[in-house]
Length: 445
Image (cartoon, rainbow, N blue to C red):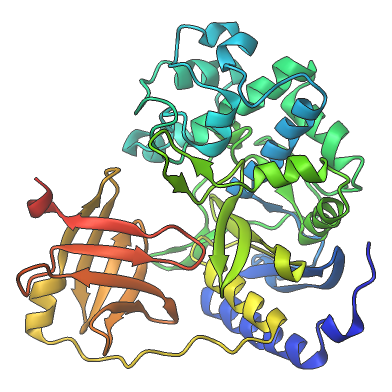
């Protein structure tokens, strides 16, 4: 790893600030988390907080294994890029040329469409049936492929952006077809093994992994084991497991150009351009946006009760990794706070919170829907607003006339009243993510 400037290391004051932040969050959620801070490829800070296993009172450490969820996607995308550099795939390759069963099953989708979530391939996990029943059942690779291709595409490839786990499942099949290896073996031979990521692998449901954290969720009687979700559905899209130490090794390799060439990695970080000429802040497996006026490459993820985020700030040669084992752990808020601590930037200002009146409650509360059909409900709760759906949190009305999430003032719901006092639409602003607009349901119909 590259030696870093001593003046830019994580000093004792910053370590104390990190400790205060993480201990408060793991205590509030009765959970555990591990964090790592990497600068110029050098892991300057890696520590665990809270419990990996509540039943046995076992602590989290930097080598505790967590499921990555969708943090798997940048790694799957890197595997695809190695095949492209080897000349076995191309971004413009139609997937039907590599996977003959798909020639007539889906629209003319390319490798690039899958990587950028612009394929239109419908995500398999967007139904109540998946949440309640299917997601708890093991599915074979052959059955998953059949399940994906039998569903119609949502739009013409390249015309829209819509997140699709099915698209990344297809990428795992492309890796296997192009390499002649299983997805798990290719990840091991091309990525994990060469980089010394000895605690990383592609998960199967019955795997025994030493020092793996259990995952948890909140239940009617307090913290409980998280609802089981079969990793077999998420091959390519969310099936990888790792530690903050192993991901720090990956970050060092990315900085030093040991995974793919600098040119290939730069290509991964270009925002996708849609057919109408507009761009969306997502590249080839990475969210591509800004925070604190700096460029950011990042990906969040969750699976069962596991959650976390891998965040890179290239202009500062900085990376932040957060992994946790409780579904409600505020990993994105923690990531943003760690970025600020590492950069020496003060926490965000708390807004001037107002007590919502009965009139406010009537004008704001209701059901809203996005252009993609995602739902957001805003319900009164003791003078505050409980939001459920695309963002789960408690919001308060502030002096600027908008709603700010309690505990995270950087998450804002901008209120659009148009020509009346009644709120007709909401815009959800979350740091590092594209803004999302929701229209009141009775106005959208």
